[in-house]
Length: 163
Image 1 (cartoon, rainbow, N blue to C red):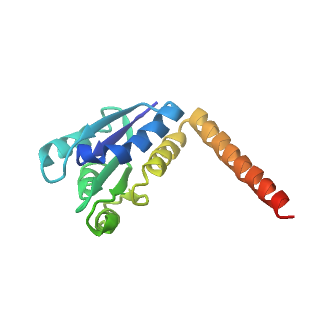
Image 2: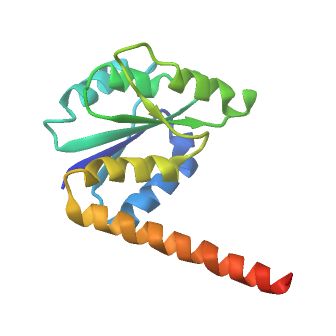
Image 3: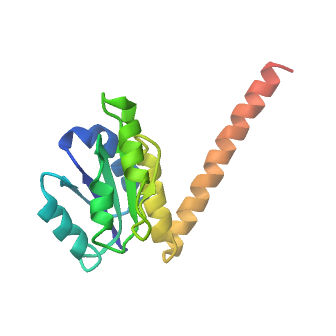
């Protein structure tokens, strides 16, 4: 199975990124976690993304706040799918990070999840891997059915209460 790279621009992003790591653990997907900055460690960021495919990665998750150029900087150096997590900071409530992550130039796509949406970033990365992994696809299907059942149980309880 391919690995997922989880890259954050600062270790202060760890509380957000931890949610992605928890989902990857839940699904048994291997990963590596690193701190690279698009601005403070551009050479290391570039080197990582240039070699990611040959190093066994199937997708990259990149979390960054404020200017949030990390996902784009990584995507510029790989054709692997890159999923950006805009991280909320005290400045502009994360809107700056969202816009920096989602507004990529034509030819360098970055899939972007919601502000602080690390769990969905991990699920999207797992879905990408599931294209060529039937076991992962089946686990995702079972998870969706389980989530649906939980909502229907809550609907039943609420309906009974107000009927």
